[in-house]
Image (cartoon, rainbow, N blue to C red; front, side, top):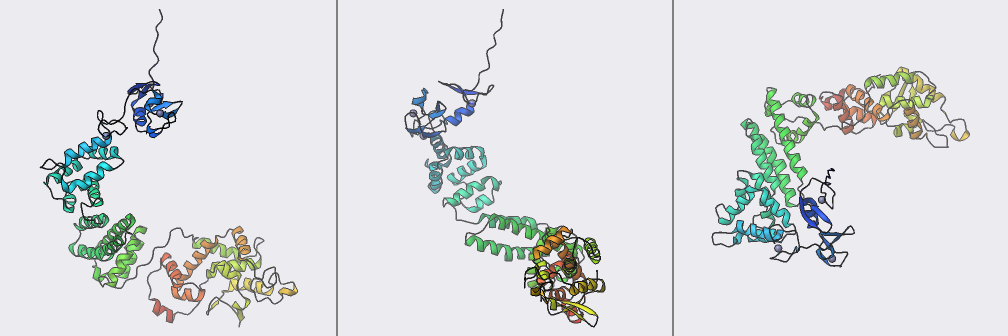
Length: 492
Ligand SMILES: [Zn+2]
Ligand SMILES: [Zn+2]
Ligand SMILES: [Zn+2]
């Protein structure tokens, strides 16, 4: 006796077995997934060229019921649309229309006139199916629609904002705004106000007042202006929230330091920045505003510096300098001089390459270099290398180059050495150029007031000031120092 086992039934389209089947068509059994996809496919039938529903499959191409021999009529019995039937004989549009009519009917038995624009908009949209899904999965929204239609609750913004579950009816509210049932408002601005109220609920009352004032003056004003021009973006709202949060934390930091906003000190600001994450720098807007409006004393709040700025350690910098002091076969004398100018005076290579001989002076046994108006002393161990270079500059052995005004003459007449030539040599010698220059600048600004460094080394105050803060220098009275400090470059 033999036992025959029947192979499991599989979907004619996706070949899956063990699935629920919807129909059996000429091609075989079709699972529910494939049936749904088939009854939502519209287009031009390749068999008869007609524009209609294409649930069938002939030679792998979507086909109409006639061409595929499907014994079913998919036309809606009410509106005549040929589409997936949602309820017996009715398409999604007609079902949505029925559902909404039931929901939006007022006490007179008619669709409420105030909600009619919404009814029309919803029933006339192309995606009736998604609108139906939205209604089905949102009991809060359907209930509210019903209440609005019957006049149990007024059609106004407060009905939505004071709803027990505002987020569940937020989409319905947006629809009402879109279709002119409610006055347009900027939902982001409103969300910010709600958020602010919640945020300040537990704060010290005086601090809450200050932060609220800041949030209104700075952020709400700006958001309202942007909303007015249609340029309000999600990012603005998020940035306003973050800035306000950090501002509140900063005020709390002041309190924790035993001070009040009115007695806040520079040390308190410096401490705030030095002892926390980089996001603390977001308090800058608040501090500037509060100082300008005399809620805070005139403290300085530095800019945040990009963390990607390459910097080598001072130890690495000193290591490079020490190596440059002894002649080596990797770098020629002129290249060592260029590297020293970079490591000692934080000069960019392009500027170094283009230097003129007169920028270096040897007078009364003192070697000086000038980048701007100030002559800076070149300390002893480095002076010897620079003197070596001056005594025998390279590329000077042709008539064309004799007495070149360039500090680093190039191979071609009248030209200076190209910065890339020096750059490659120094890189080969293992010097991270940008890192080295930043490290040098940082070391210089620790020893000298930033404006002095800026003036003598031809940097903008902003840059030297930034490096100064990065180096962890404490606040100094620049103005006083500037008039009393004599120029001199610290030896490494
Ligand atoms: Zn299937
Ligand atoms: Zn056809
Ligand atoms: Zn229909």
